[in-house]
Image (cartoon, rainbow, N blue to C red; front, side, top):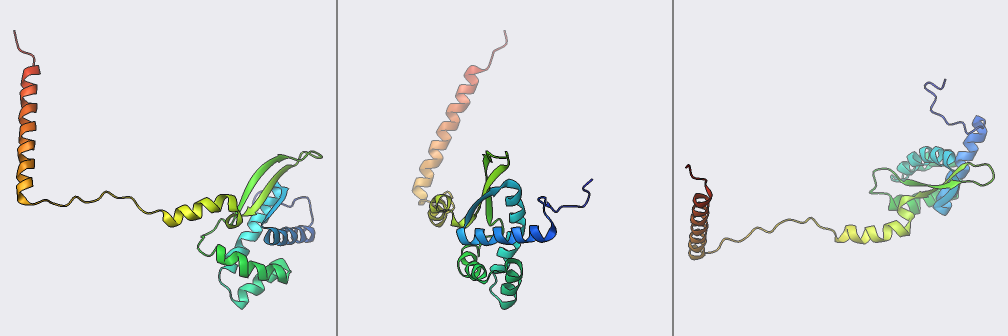
Length: 175
């Protein structure tokens, strides 16, 4: 039984799994989108999201912590200079996983994992819409002078009288 065992071992030893996650993370940072198996994509998401969260605050300590996880100074530089400014206002969920079917050779379920803010197809329309989007409210009608208010009262009184007359005509009479 797998009680309290959340690590997906991916059929690898600890050191091999660690190297795999580092290499996948470096490839994702470099290319912004990679194709892999669904299991590896889910493991990579859990690995890369805390690193991206750290990159939002550019300090020496955070750079060292990111380097400790990635072991690639070029990826760390790209992470802090290109990716961090784009995700600065996002509270999480920096990656997106698309399922793409099954691999022909072994039937493994494949997926594409990408950085959300770097997909131009989705973000091109939404960034323009979000900047132009404003809340819609009804405008408050301005009060007219006293004379038009009196006319409105007369109209209301006439409609009330008509409604009263209509209801008396339609009531059934006792016979």
